[in-house]
Length: 577
Image 1: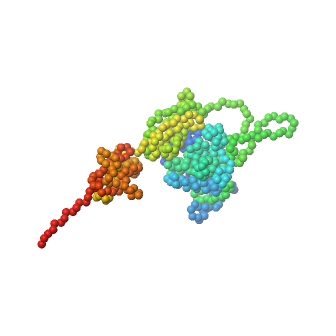
Image 2: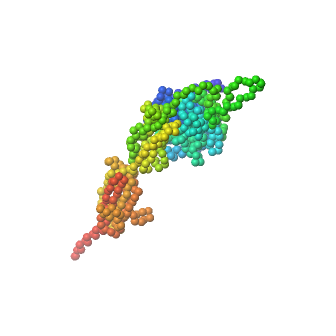
Image 3: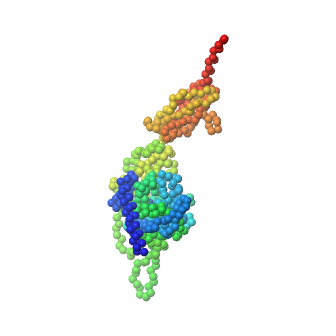
């Protein structure tokens, strides 16, 4: 046993060293905005201060403690099967059935919605192992919901991040501070925007492994990361829990699960025992602190001196909450930066307008201030794109972004990217952890435009009465000399150059049923700015006719169409003998 333990330590140290070396080697090629501090932690986002000291809201878990147990020495031996490899072996290699199913369903969903992310289910399994020991050994019901809540320690700044309550205790049972919740250990402020309904029951529950696994997958796939790329994989894992040791541990389990695993019944999974905070696991009690039990009655008639009450034991697993201490003098406390904020002020945000599909030229910027108007640094500001009438997002495809104010008290949202839906929408700014009135900014998306239309061919368009035109009309749209893609257009056969009403005779198009149509609406240029119209036909009327094509933005092109009888060949002269 001693020899085995020593070997395992050496293997773990070697694995950690290799992973750490890989992180160091990749530090020069991290995704944009990724920086490394003196402790090897990394931050992501537009501002290097997006995860300040003592504040974990820049990560999924609030940088809560995690399990540090390393994989077993013996690698799984996959059984010869078709599809996902199965294996038998050490119990620690097994994943509870419902939990394993949730990971695979989440990965399948992401492969369809975000194929460029290349999310392996084994990564979700590795994170689930490190965060909660696979939902504490698969302690879930048939629907995938944990039988008892899994809560991280109180994030009160006492050895952990300092995150004031953001959910009124709705998820973590604590109305003073936040705690990481559920099998994937999301803090409430992150679950608010990252939560998903993975099992289709109409709810987003961080305590449900299907919901939590899908949310974790989406969280890891934001910022257009490709998890088949090592640098992007490292960045994604570090964004989940900002610690190099965490990264190394997750990478170790990822590699282990990739070699094979096997399904075990729910509730029979092996529980890890070592935590990064020195405790034996996240508490499963929904109460933020233990309830004191009634002191025992003394056995002697004399009146004993009062003693502090003893805490009741936790209802499963270890607890990270310290034992109550006798009441003492109340010491004055220094308010956190967030508690000193009185209001939000605009910080020079310009007009927010963009053409569909383009990036906005201006970014929303706000400043947190005290009642006296003094700027407050290191305060979390949340930017939220409100409503479902727009498909605009922030850079990276998210609709919510949390940014920490800089030394001037300013927080600047990531750049907005317009979708295809046009019209106005709102970007709402709020202070995380406070109920202060936020600021709303109106952003407008205008339709794509073209200022020039030109035919791609100079071939004359002619037809005989009752026939069809041999060539189809094709045009190219440009805007300021650049290709104008996805621009709306209309084509109409008009009466004359001075009368743009629809003609009632002459050339025509056909609809799907073969009926005569002389106006085509809802046309759109392709990615190259090209628009090719359907075939044109001629009735019995001869003459010169006009086809007018117009686009959003005012580009107009008029094309001539000629319908004429075929020329009668000259009769050959007769000869006489």
